[in-house]
Length: 476
Image (cartoon, rainbow, N blue to C red; front, side, top):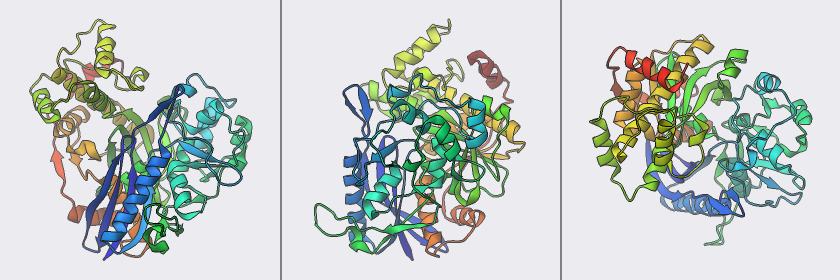
């Protein structure tokens, strides 16, 4: 039996999870969990990266005290980075992608040319725009968040390809840094370290624990590159049978799309704002970022200690599609008073607004299902691929109301689970590199289906109400 440790960092929290892999299944054990709160200072929103590093180190130490650990791997959110000087020292805290510094930023590369090379959808916080907003004058190396933590643990600098693809600075066709594009955008190519593939060994974990003064995990455990963009790891753990599937990786963000063999770089794909991110084993994650449970998280934060279970139960008893918003409207991107923002969106269009928290919750879930419908219909049309089912993985797979609404909206069966998809995908790529798991993605997914509980939701209704609601909020 092989125990691999997954460090899974999300936008609101992180976890260290030990996974025990055999040829017959996988067992996960949560070792530690910690919050990931942004820091507001001097008008800028930062990540508290040093506290995150300390939490990761503490979690690895705890894992080593409980298990005989064979490897570890790190995944996180995309696009954000730390800059190192010539001595390898961090220059300031990484800035949060929800900071406003990229508002209105442009680069001297036409959108069509940028998409033709990178295949990445336009998002104002993509790495390329962050660098344009804050030119890295004193930096020698740029490391994305999981690569930065890997560097501190091993001393080895590199860039794992699935996360590197989200920067809009990687050539999606060759999977190499787009140095010509960087030059045109005024971004120094010397910033970017060599690329790594999922399954590559980064190096032994040699960082010392401040609490114990000894190498973490004994200094002998290898850190293995996984699909370090959390969605890349989550898609590995989509328990699909055959290629005709769509997926929704449902968390703070919802990543909605399909797994393809190659990128879709058409004008229509660019205008629909679909992205072609590198996946594990040379696959392409053809998807669209949809505002996810962020809407609900921000509402819960604004309300006074609500019982979310009771709110979801009350929301399930309310009429469908009475209140719907365009969940992808940029007005919902920043943190703040989300209930008021939702009500204002509706009122400004002469539409009725929710009057209670339960109505607001129902509005959010209906609106998310509607956004999923648009993304999945578009993904199938643009890729020329049909989906027989939608796999919902991640935390949102536990939300039975959202899963049923998604089935109704999309007119397809929804298969929910696993909720721990990111950690499972992280662990499976490590275990495969160690020879403890099967070699291909279909084989890894078959292993998952044999040991993970799944729930199926069948669509109810003919979809005409959803089509009408889509027109009401401006979906085309």
